[in-house]
Length: 148
Image (tube, rainbow, N blue to C red; front, side, top):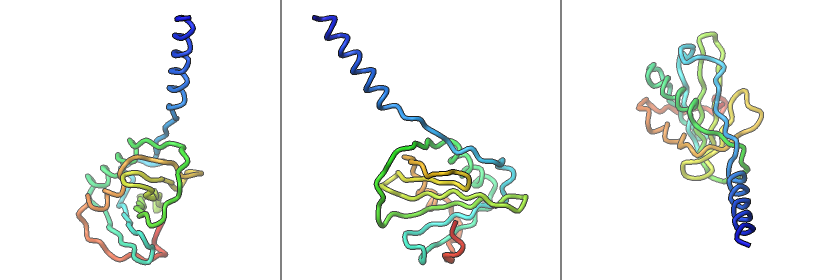
């Protein structure tokens, strides 16, 4: 009987571990940080009230680039939230193209990310919204047509 109980407990542990593990992904930029001329950082709750900062310092650009390279993204279903903020980044590249990363907050320090080349948005527990306050550049009004 003890062997049977141990076996059942072991089986339950394995099932729990398999159920808890979910595949994580990362953003793999199709460009190098050295290709980035500047980053437009947008933030808003209502698009008509959007603001932007233009990040030009090389160390700040690299910091943003590395942030996205190391965050974990998961394919987890979440409930949409009303009134959440959006923080987005447009990387302007030296070849004249741009690449966007859009973060939509769904709860404090968590949200969904989609990039220019992703087919669907993915969940992250990273606090991307904090980037808005982190970079000390002048916040300017942004037109809705400018938003990524």
